[in-house]
Length: 454
Ligand SMILES: Cc1cc2nc3c(=O)[nH]c(=O)nc-3n(C[C@H](O)[C@H](O)[C@H](O)COP(=O)(O)OP(=O)(O)OC[C@H]3O[C@@H](n4cnc5c(N)ncnc54)[C@H](O)[C@@H]3O)c2cc1C
Image 1 (cartoon, rainbow, N blue to C red):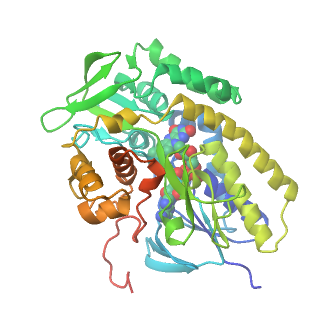
Image 2: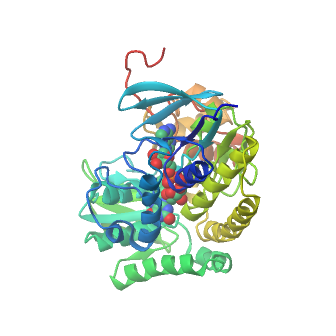
């Protein structure tokens, strides 16, 4: 066989480690990423490098960020890095790309999808007002653009990003109005025994909370019925905590309720999906090494199921070793076994985190019919509930046909999970039965360029 054509999508921790292992084995993978510089979400770099110190951008993760960033120059000439390039469609053996040089198609014998995750958005009254951002988006504004989303910012969520981002804003000199956790404090205690399996990571999380408390930032748990109010933009946030109605004045809000995997390319590649009850989403079925159901298509990192950055690094390398093995090339079997063992150990901590931040079902239960769920198409929660009951649409693609939910620019990447939750709850059925919106190309909006769709 001539040298196999290998493509890796995603230059985050998973994709970079996959590329390093492939280059080490003598292959020259094509690395595709929308971003100008490698690092993915957690280690996202300012597009122009901007020269801000790693300690300032990544805090306690600065050393890891520096190691991942250093891989790019170390691999120069050994990988074909296509930066600022979107993979917008996927076939059995090729990807459609759109980069600085225009549209192109890259064929592959093997493909590693390391496409990461986005914030999980859940609707609530006022969430479409200017000044409301995703929690991770608020963080990316700091890391990539060096700006804050407001002068007095409140944060709302249900995951470990909540105290982290609030702390990063505090350290950047922004007034943090309040930190509102939609999950109960008792859940943290339930997650503790498993989280003790990674004491250093747990200590970091506790440090963020301690810093917020020291700075006198109001923190509330089991926050319910949040609603943003203001004339034309965010002016205040109302919510219930401990059975008491409260109000916080703020000019911006960072809010999201966990992460969701970016799986559209795997879907278009024809990979089989399965429901993961832990993260309440459908993800590509895979073995412990990252092999999908499609021959020579591998999935790694948060795009294959939420596992965090350390797990993403290990999974990216493990997938690369599986790829080498499947192509009949030499690979280090001991290293592969070690990587799998390490991933299993990290999974114990992840289970603890999941127990500490359970999905806030009350956000779905309390969602009123008038609140917008699908922003692209302007579909309110009530329309979905009506489709679920009156039109017997228990599955999201069927509900899409009736209501147009998920049919707009984002193709359901932002509203698909919330839609499934609303449908399942309206019908009193298991979430897995609501299914997932099927991926459609382009996976993200692209301009209509001559020759693009030929
Ligand atoms: C906004 C955000 C902020 C986060 N911040 C933190 C944090 O501070 N601390 C923390 O511990 N965890 C954080 N996380 C979670 C953390 O980012 C992940 O656990 C970790 O980065 C996963 O690594 P990965 O390599 O799987 O994916 P990522 O790091 O997400 O990298 C995926 C890469 O794939 C690229 N990509 C995706 N689709 C395409 C496509 N179609 N075409 C081209 N390129 C594509 C993206 O541009 C990205 O660079 C954050 C997550 C998000 C979404």
